[in-house]
Length: 334
Ligand code: NAD
Ligand code: TYD
Image (cartoon, rainbow, N blue to C red; front, side, top):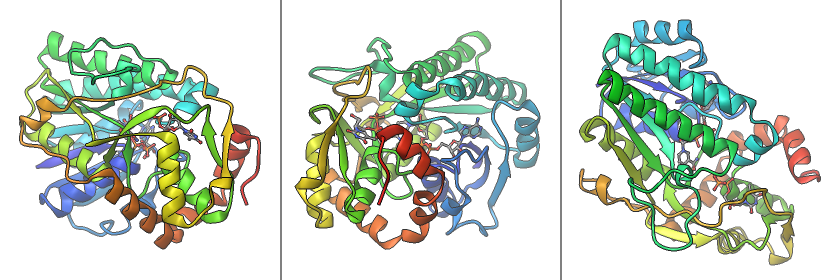
């Protein structure tokens, strides 16, 4: 296939691009704004691939989007482009509104004009928090944060383009991803790097919040199934095989890095913090997808990747991220 992948320079987008280029033989054009989270380093092992092209641009810019469609001549658009950190959405929601609402709108208009299949990459956070059981695709949408509320708005706009204009659009909603190339503002890479450096491990509140962890290669394969086999207008949840409380994730990371439990610091809780996420994935399983990576093993591999790839995180940890960390956590990194 020929694909236009928006937001392909980020964590999951670059994982998806790697799979499509190297395992499926697709031709892939990435359109990415390169925010703080988007990095050309994520293309290091396929940047020179003859079927790969990178264009820098924002999805809310109609000229950048039409230029990318002209260059790529794609059959489908897969949209990963987003602001993705809940804490940043609480501190500064502006970019979340413009990228998720306006950016998604511009992409949908372009997909409609060129009659392209469209895949929106979304999140379990649109359903809000669940005490027990798991969300299905029929569960009501009750987002809690500016991040999840603007992602929900984007999903609804995508569905409106299916209902109103027959745009062949599908939505893939993933649970919490982890794996190589994840920006260290998120729980797992933040804790790995802090553990390796002897820094404090800042656990929000009691640390008993539960997340449904999926390896980024598993979520990327689920998106591939939805792209190839998803029924237009439908939503597909893709959750990981394991759920774990944050404090237990941190303890696993301490054990894998040889850090000390005395590094754990319970800090003020996140405002509006969702207690638990859990997805039922029966519908995407019916398309032939199964998660392949169990959390215990995937987390060990992820710790090893960060330990072995300081070339990737060193420039982040010594750059703007330090200032972000000081603002968010009120303390400096080692
Ligand atoms: P990320 O923050 O690592 O990457 C986001 C990418 O989007 C970056 O490359 C960034 O430069 C790009 N981008 C941001 N705004 C843009 C714009 N206006 N125009 C063009 N490019 C722009 O995020 P990620 O974790 O890889 O998430 C990718 C997608 O998956 C997002 O839509 C996110 O909501 C969704 N998702 C993430 C998770 C998770 O746990 N990380 C779980 C479920 C769903
Ligand atoms: P995060 O990786 O930000 O993902 P999300 O908010 O999208 O689930 O956070 C995962 C969980 O870890 C969430 O319950 C918040 C918690 N957390 C901490 O306890 N400390 C931290 O420093 C961070 C970044 C997250």
